[in-house]
Structure formats: structure tokens, C-alpha cells
Amino acid sequence: MMLELLDFDFMRRALVAATFTGLAAPAIGTFLVQRRLALLGDGIGHVALTGVALGLLTGVTPLITAVLVAGLGAIVIELLRMYGRTSGDVALAMLFYGGIAGGVLLTNLAGDSAATLNRYLFGSITTVSTADLWLIGGLGIVVIAIATVLSPQLFAVCQDEDHARVSGVPVRAYSILIAVMAAVTITVAMRTVGLLLVSALMVVPVAAAQQLTRSFRTTHVAAMLIGLLAALGGVVTSYEIDAQPGPTIVLLALAGFGVAALVGALVRRRPALITPEST
Amino acid sequence: MTQPTSSDQPVLRVTGATVTLDGRRVLTGVDLDVAPGEFVTLLGANGSGKSTLVRAAVGLVPLDSGSVELFGTPLARFRDRRRIGYVPQRSRAVAGVPATVHEVVMSGRLPRRPYLGFGGRADREAVEAAVDRVGLGDRLRSSLADLSGGQQQRVLIARALVTGADLLVMDEPTAGVDHRHQESLAELLGDLSRDGVSVLLVAHELGPMRVLIDRAVVLHDGVVRYDGPVSGVTGEEHEHVHHHATRETRIDVPGAEGVW
Image: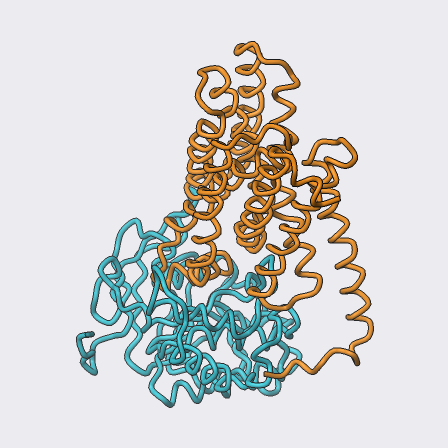
């Protein structure tokens, strides 16, 4: 069955895109969850929609306009978080609403139908072009590489921002880097999971992994593996049942969380089976 | 690399510090010195500005006016970050993803590689030594979330010590820690103090720490109200001093509403 799927060019492209998406989303998502900013991805996804619509309106590849607008939005969000006072929360909400309203309006102006928009909101395996794939692969590798190479520094920033700042770690620069990486990941994932559900692939695999782990590094790696399995499984399933890939990927990831939570609860209820926590 | 600190130069000098947060004046013209090897405690009621003062001292809160010098260098130009060990309030120790004691203490090594780089063997050895020092050598691979409040506090101290800090700045390390753990914490801080580490400690209650303290500074409404030996801290006694009041001298401040 799997081999038969690979006969289709579009399916091969979709599976490659899913590989980068499944690995990159939890790679950066782990830092967002650690920092208790799990919903940040949602907000940036909304803003990215305006970027997609700008692409549709101007005839530029939507992936490129989306990554630019989402990146810019991420920087604005991070600056609001840093310097904003009590009104920061509301300012963020307004940015998110503006993103989604602007996206829908501009798509209408471009003369594209709701069906076009739908493909970006929930993913579409048949529309990944070869040019898209190069962009998805390139950006995906950059995100995974940064999340790996800078992991000691990003860990410190997300674990305890104050302590990192006193230690001389450039907290503001790294905070902006995390937000921009989230924006890039959202654009990478847009074709596969779609903008409205991409945040789930950044968060759910991490939540699933930490049911069974007690170190950051294991959580990080396990989340990437769960994300990869969910993305690949979701793309194949969506082809088999003729559904959009976004919802199937996310439901698979949630099922993974359910299993992990159950196993985690069983393990914790029988502490005698766990090896002692020694070095 | 570092200018040697002359023996009489304070490790921390705050001069005329005035801080406004969200439009409210929190500190007004506060002076505070910590001499090498000195153990100074900062006392005051909730809202007296003691946390803000230590946060300003390590550069987390900007000053409206006044200055901070660390080891004789103005804060803005101070680069030798490994010399300060900052221990924030424990309530924020556990983040959204599990992390082991080893991982958290390892992040204390970042003054040596703030921009890039992984820990090497020297870092791992320093982490093990620091965790041993706080008495948690057998919990190196435990998740921080699985430890008690007192143990988490020790992990944060190990993270502060892991670069060989000369000055420990601690924000309410005894908050929410039971008496037994406070005693072992006091023992640990006593050892560090004898080794020449300077300590600036924000406290709500002194408990077993009391005997270690060289000097107490009392803040009230953002102004230094007292600066001298602990024994000189006076005031009206509250009903709710301590459950174990027999072990301690009662300390109080005029107008303080906190539990001492």
C-alpha cells in the first residue's frame, strides 16, 4: 500500500513536506511550551494568513509572503510582550484578529474562493509544488539546526528568563529568535497541517512526550519523533480516507497523547517498576 | 582576566537607587553596600521594595537614578557574570517542560558561553560538584518537579554556585520551605559564607539563618529604615511571630504587616 502511494509525485512531495513539518514543529514547540507560550503559534498562524492572502493578491508565491509577514508579526508580538504593560494581552489579541480578518478580506479581493483559503487553513497534500518543497526543506532544516545548536542557550532563556539575563545570555535577542523560528515553522507547516492547526503540531507532541519523560532533552527528541510519526501517518491517512491532512495529523497526535498519558499514569501508579532515580 | 578585588572594595555597591515600576515609586534613594565575605540580609514587609532592590542590583530592573557597581565595575559595563550567583524566587523554578537537576544546574554554566556552545567535561564536573555541595548528589537525574520545595531551592543555589560565584544574591530562599529544610539551608549558607562567598539575602523570616547574618538592612516603603546588626532590629512584636519562636529572636519593623 505504502509503495503504491509513492508512485504519485504529489504524494512523494507531500511526505517529504510532512517529514520536515513533523520534525520542525515540535523542535521549536518544545521551547514555547517550556516558556508557557503554547498559544503563541496560534497567534502567529493567524497573522501568517494575511501573508498568504498578500501572495494571492500580488501573484508572489504565498509561502514567501507568508514567511515575511509571519516573521514580522512574530517580532511585533515579542516586542509587545517585552515592553508592553498591562495592555499587552489585548494588543496581542487585536493583532491576531487583524491577521485573520486581513487574510480573508485580501483573499476575497484577489478573487480567490473560500476553497483556496481552506487549503491554507487546513493543509492540502495535492498542492505542494517542487518549488514549495525546496523552500519547506530549506527553512525546515534551518529551524531544526537552530533548535539543536542553540539548545543550551534557548533552554536557559525558556527555563528562567531572569536567571539567564543575569548570566549574560542575550535574552531579548533569543526571545525574538524563538518567535521568528515559530513563524518560519508555521510557514513550513502551512501546506501540510494548515495555519489553523499548525500550533497543535507544535504543542501536542510535546505534551505527549512529557507524559513519559523527566528530562528536557528526552522530551525534545521524543516530541520530534511523535511529531514526525503524526505528520507522516496523517498524510497517508488523509489520502486513504480522502480528507484534508491537517485534521488527520492533529487527531493522530492527540491519539498519541492519549496513549502516552495512559502509559504514563500506569507507570506512575506502579512506582516499584521504575528504576530508582539515581545517576 | 578580572581586576583583583581589593579587600576593602565592596562586591556590591548601590548608591542612591530610585526605581519606579508601573508609575509607582518603589525605591527612593537607597544605598546598600556588601563587603567581601559579608552576609547581609534585606528585611521588610511585603511591598517594602526589598525584592525590587535585589533585582535592580543584578540589572533586572532599571534605575531611574542612582548607580549599581559590582566588584567595582558599573553594572552597565560589568561582563564577569560568572561572579554573581542569582537565586530567584523558587515559585518560578519549574517550567512547562520537565527538566532534570543536571540540566537546570548546567544552565548556570552559561556565563562561560552565553551565545553559543554545549557543555563539556569541565562543565559536567562542575555541575556534579555543585549538586553534591547542596547535598543532592543522588538526585542528579531527577526531574525538578519531583523534588520538594526545599530541594528545588537547593537546585537553584547549585545553579548559582556552579561557576564559582563570589556573590550570592538570593530572593526569599526560605519562602515556603519547612523548618527542617531551613536549617539545612542555613548550614549550607554558613559553609559558603565561611569559604568567603558574600551573600545578599532577601528574607521574610530569618529562622535558623539568623546566626549567620553580619548585617541587616531594613526597608520600609522603599527607604532604608535600618542598617546594622540583626540584634538592633526592633519594633512592635506581632502576635503571629513563629511557631518555633523559642528558637529565634523576634525581629520586627515598625509598620510591617508581614509574618516574621
